[in-house]
Length: 122
Image (cartoon, rainbow, N blue to C red):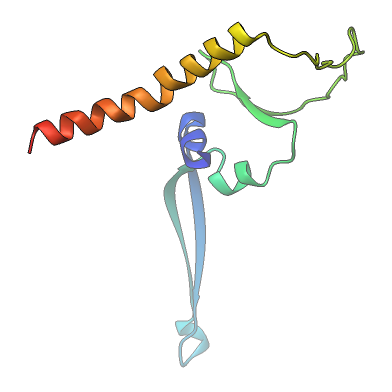
């Protein structure tokens, strides 16, 4: 997932300069060469995405090339209602029978039908 997010954020081209120093047998043969190389790399690497803390994200606005890292703040909402309170009740015999039929038709009967189909194909 981090790789997908990294690809979605895009890539950038960076011009890297490298300096090479060579030493010869004589001081006159010493030399310095400078090379330039253009490297394409992701704007945000997948390891940087994986290392983010909770409530941190990168934002890229459509139509813009700018990407910014955001640190979000969690605002805990006040409790509007009490937590779920479980109701204790005893179902009627008719309700118990309907529940058992529902379980039979949802769980047991499909398996029996599959067994009949398998046996008929033999």
